Amino acid sequence: MPPAQDPSEDKHDVLRRVFGFEAFRPGQEAIIDTLLAGRNVLAVMPTGSGKSLCFQLPALVEDGLTVVVSPLVALMRDQVSALRLAGIAAETINSSRDRPDNVAAWRRVAAGQVRLLYMAPERLMTERMLAALGRLPIRQIVVDEAHCISQWGPAFRPEYEDLSRLPSLFPGLPMAAFTATADEITRREIADKLFAGAADIFVHGFDRPNIRLAAEAKRDWRRQLLDFVAEHPGDSGIVYCLSRKKTEATAELLRQHGVRALPYHAGMAKEDREANQNTFMTEAGVVVVATIAFGMGIDKPDVRFVVHTDLPGSIETYYQEFGRAGRDGLPARALLLHGLDDIRMRRLFVEEQQGDEDHKRREHKRLDALIAYCEAASCRRVMLLRYFGETVAPCGNCDVCLEPPELVEGTEEARHALAAVRDTGQRFGAAHIVDVLRGADTAKIAKFAHERLPAYGAGAEWPKAQWHSVIRQLVAANHLVLDIQGHGGLSLTSGGHELLAGQGGFRYRQDEWRRKKQPARTAAAAPPEAELDPAETSLLMALKELRRRLAGERGVPAYVVFHDRSLADMARRRPQSVADFGQIHGVGEAKSRDFAEVFLAAIAEHAD
Image 1 (cartoon, rainbow, N blue to C red):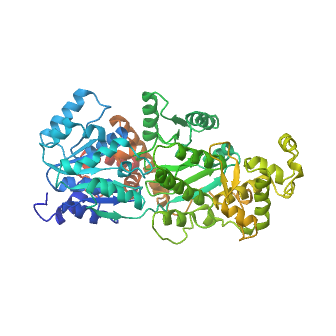
Image 2: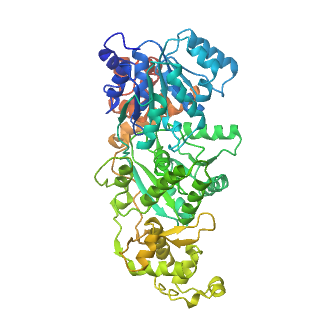
């Protein structure tokens, strides 16, 4: 459906009048122009770069209904709440609402009173809904979190697969797909399924420079977690665990140390999960401890840290999960704890998946890339973005850049370790191999007479942590492989046999036992209050309290009312009139109408 007129002036008017922004962010305008021209779009944009505006604005520039496919009820609810506060007629029809509410919403849609309609894929793809939508003047269909349609994406959802029928059901209708997480294979599959390959593809970078990246080998993961969280008093954060049991135990551990921590996993009652998520979204200083059941579409802007206590399944998954930190562009941190047991478990998960051997091979390669990231001896951000096809200079904002590890010659030590693995029968795990190398006196060594091996005691002068690090790096370098079906037994690869036979060398990274404690904050960006004087900071705190109260009255997260940047702009400029208030960043006509009076009164009261 081509536009009836040149929309170039309208889009800037809508941007200012509705959303309260003076200019587009990088990458937004080209995507908006393509959609307004009636062409299909696949857009890959980093979290926090303004993806939603790219389809919300075209929905307002032209007549007709925009249907948005979204994977989670919570995400739909928050986005619809934010749109309504901005004066935009938006609705959602979903399973969490009573039937009368859904019926009333549909009547408004059918009457032409709604510009954006949010639905989950299983709701949209019912024959009854498709037939009803076919009678309406639909302007475009948008698939949010589009990586869910690809079996190569980090959060494949089978119900998204049915969306591939949309082009034939609505021929000629422009479609758009948005995601923050899609490598080249995933992008190609999304384009093939949704557009038969006919789409303008925009890839606007994966870098999140405000997030400080770090990875550590597990030593005492509980102590590592507690030390890290202690550096973020009063901050909101997410801690990911692999199992439900560990999620509950970790939340309790944090509570025992004074952290307001709430669990979230699929084994909890639905009402408990929703209550914990609502607390996290609406209140400050809450840490959610969760399995991967939590997070997709979570749009809380002020998450200051994300910790993984276990290894994710791929770089795509990890990128998506740590990307929930720092969506406001302010400093945030991501810490990944990892160990050999994690690698074994992840390998086992891949083997137990349904799918052919080619699928499993690709999943193993994805895991390989994440293991290499964990063991990186150079800038982590360079390695991460290279995986997604981007080339950048070292970032200066990861643990490796801030304190470069020393690479040391370790060929002789590596050969000792490989010999110990070979001579013990290539069936024991790292703990036993380290005991052999250090000449330990254990029952297992005595049982198998391993004290008689040439490698016994060959590394007695090294601490256990150092040997574990070298073995882990030998696994990462593909000299050793883990028995994923058994108990993590180590065996040599062809590369390991070659190294043991004197071919090639091995250098290893001095690991965390030599590292200093990292500073908690980065200078990548300063929080809004850092630019304010004491009086302005005091006003900002008062405005935040007002925002919290208003959000509570409306049952929405605080950022839906105003982002911190808007409040900081108010504190700095101290608007005295409705006209002044309308010039604040993020204040459109509807928010000026609904909130100017109460915020102007608070500013005046603070001045008095």
